[in-house]
Length: 316
Image (cartoon, rainbow, N blue to C red; front, side):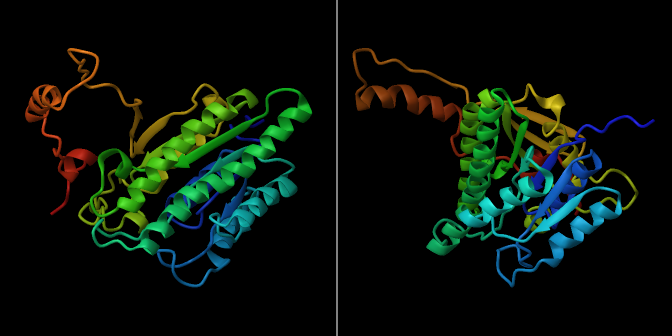
């Protein structure tokens, strides 16, 4: 007799699940026993351009079913409020309830801040940040209503996708970095709001080689000797599976960096230094006297080389 899987009896939505990280996450949740709604708009380009297609999401759903799991495809733009509502309703009508929401869908329109136009800014904020909000909003309504009906806690897990572009900065991605920072704020706010219903919300900063990061990791070659490829999307998905599981009931409002064989739990910002005015309020001269020397010792513009930040060896 086989032991029950960690996500047996649970249902999940994974957005942007036709390729890369989303696909790996959908496959992992299904492997752990969840019934999955595979959402993807199916546009071929990473900037969100091209004709939408049902084929990519259908292929992943078919792959899950072929392995003995349960999955259906949903072709929709999560940044559209009504389509996000329909996505959540599809999960509920198909599987009876929604238990897990993994927000992964996103696009890139990279440009330096002085070159970026309004459309490039709006498009990335729309898909990443508004897309995360839309699905979270309707999932939260579902869980709150279920909690009211039952008179107690329900099972709910949200796993959002942020990025180290928010943590460390990314000069050519002001829209993406801002969206990913906003997602962290959305996650922590959601975690506080839904905890009383039994729902947790966490965010991950994944490092993985996908079509979204093909430029970032262009110099990091896949190992040819059979050793671990630290940037394979499949090494991110186990953390998503864990955060979606009952085992992670005590993990809420957290930000975790993950790649290969590494998971780093990120602390909330801490005060690095504190200065008190000699009198009731500061003067310009006093601030100059206190703060300028502090940053003279710690250059505010200090950055790290990519290999140092990523902890990876670049192949040349």
